[in-house]
Length: 247
Ligand SMILES: *Cc1c(COP(=O)(O)O)cnc(C)c1O
Image (tube, rainbow, N blue to C red; front, side, top):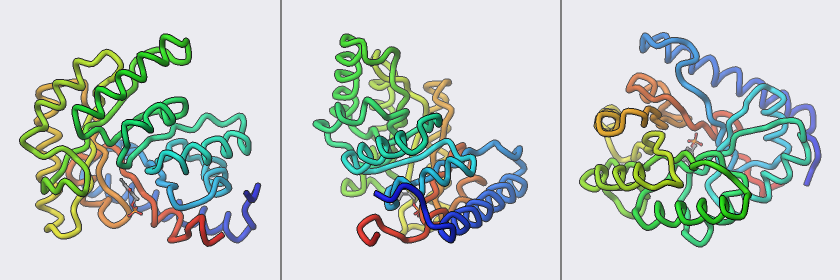
């Protein structure tokens, strides 16, 4: 692992971050929302720990990963590179139940809870970790909502949202913080975000403390902000198309 980036890469990351922040500010203004109403989560799934270290130096505090194993390694590397930083790590990918235990030591929030089985598995591991004295308190999670109900893409179909959110809200090891969604590429984006916003509104009505809406990525963050997103998850626009494997 490279401990630090070449200066050109650090400069590139700074320019990209400035551009994303400018887009986010403009989107908040255009939507009539306060600047800073939407937080920025850097999706670092394709880049090395040295990029995360640079982004920490540039003031970012929230990061997202979508593969348990890659993430665990990276979290440890970042902790070694920036021992005084305390970044938040969100998990945003498909999570197998047998990987829950591995992510618990570092994960701040799991955004991809989309089935009762996964919810129960997380609850069980949180309980065990508490008994071992390794953590205390429930883990904040988001329920991942599927706009089109396609089971291959992850997310709970619309008809199962209420039941899953009631289950999550009732599990002692989980704290239902809100909704996460990915707008499908093959849908008219404004309609997809309208459906996501409606699902989030329904969730908040049932569970008033579930206020977060994690929606919007590099290509559609403006639309997401316009539809009430509170967190955008930005990968490509921030870090480019680099992949760890090509290093
Ligand atoms: C990769 C990823 C993102 C970021 O997508 P970009 O288009 O690269 O910004 C956001 N959310 C999830 C769940 C992802 O897997």
